[in-house]
Length: 128
Image 1 (cartoon, rainbow, N blue to C red):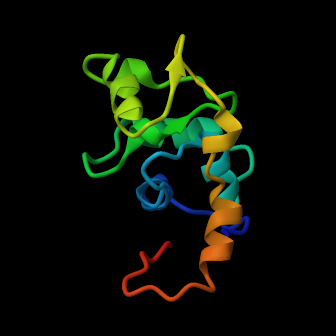
Image 2: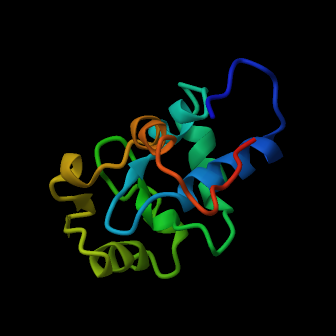
């Protein structure tokens, strides 16, 4: 689902961000901006970051990084090293707070979820 320029509440936006983040496969990462772009709000990377700051525990927030692959949200994890530890547990290499081979593990929701539409699923989360 791609959002248009219609007005929405922060609560609805945050819920949509969480739903997209839950779809990120283990061993892959995406960026705040890529989630925002998928939701139809191209310049909303900071809002996505704000949403991720207060996300529910079932949202894999460790899989969302900045557009350069930096673990810019690590200070919201307790302890901050937890974000890197979770990524490494999924097989993602991190050096100096940056994902190694970022392009190879990047998950673009706009491309991946568009392709996913053709695949039948038993349970597909509803966005929006």
